[in-house]
Image (cartoon, rainbow, N blue to C red; front, side, top):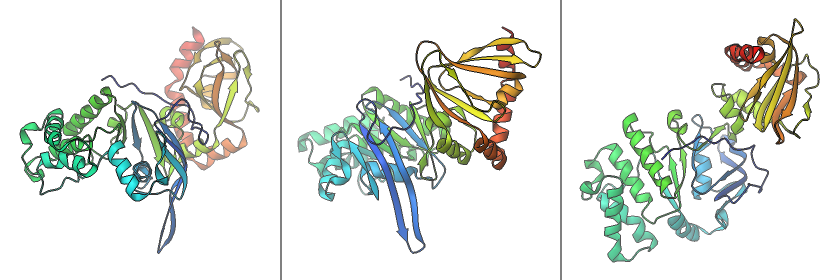
Length: 380
């Protein structure tokens, strides 16, 4: 399967996912209480997942990744907010109803496999069919063998989990997750205990399942695997970082990314309309989320030049202007479609650059590394 990277638009407004999402999470808050007080693991998280998507969720340890997927599986309950899968509001179900619903709709793959050690691989894969009552008893063994064949383990069907490798145990766990033919697979760090070669094999298995029409949400710490999924959500301190910020400013620390997520403002400009930044001498940041940003500038010597239009996912900052030696810069919505930007400029950004040296250094170094592109465009 050829998986292409897709960066979605800005986070949906509550209950306003575009199209027909398979999973809709709306303003999920999860607060844990213990003897030390309260800890909020998720802070008004809204996200949508669509049929046939392979989405990864990444973030540092303790960022809220596993808590997020536990909201979807119903293993944990939100303090506030809703999770809708298909037409079902998951947390409105009783525990018994949720167990039945989960058995039919979700396949869950855990980091530590969770195979029952006293059952053979075949029996482990058959177990969900028994528990849910799906498939006639006479069909279950044959179906389990077919699933083990799918993951390359039919020759090990009668082995106990301890008699096979970690990668084989994880493959058996994937076969078990598929036992009831659920439309959605939730995988929480499925490659966390595997070597890189075996992790690649597990990923390839997931990719094949996407080709068969499954939808997969995978929590992972492996950035290289996440980069191969269709879409990646980056979570930090219980909040989702704006996916345009995460994609365009990868390499920047999570804290400044989260700050930009809070402060960049979405703006839309009809085709041909100029983009005004306010004080031309103040710091500014623009991120193109749709359409084309057309840029022209004047050098310190007064020479005017046309700079190539910037498309979706492009970042433009006052540091780029300085690195290109442009005394003035003029921006407008190019092409025929509206231009959508995430914008910040003025004193608050200048103060942030002073308070967050890592953000300033990142933008300065990025501008210097792209100066040849600017010069080439300006002299074309």
